[in-house]
Length: 229
Image 1: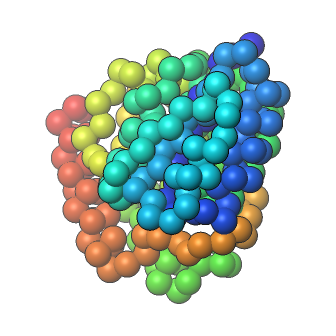
Image 2 (image 1 turned 90 degrees about the vertical axis):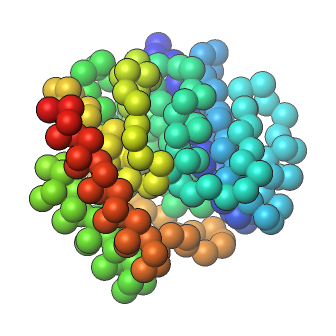
């Protein structure tokens, strides 16, 4: 059986985090009960999120606590770098991804990675939809990343992640990882994913400032990829 690290990245999700942790632990029992871990990255939450996380008593849980909010990119990187098992997957702490979707991929080839994609995004605001479209255009035509949903859940092989040094620290770090894996010849397995309603809280990250950050980071990534051939 392949070993697993599930990462939950969370910021102010006190309404959802308990059920997300519980469902993730149940999934780990099915994936590999002995060689598995649940890494929870609390990205500077100022509500009761951290207290809820700390109430869990399971030897598989490891907590990484950012004392201040650093953003999704930094949270992802903290989790990915801390992961110690073969298959690594980061999921949001808002309950919009069901960890049960990981079970069919308990084992997969070393030269592939799994990319889930959402087909239902009607809960997005108009501004969030514009941001998503902007991001897809940059990924597809500027970075040549032809993936349906580069910003949704992925399953990577830890051995490959250890060979790359990400240059980005924003949410575009997923674009960087995917671009480097594609250039290294990895096969993409794309899987349709159900996009669940939030269990509470509000969406973070859709702003004019975010658009400028995405544009700046895309240019930075493009230059880095060109240097590496």
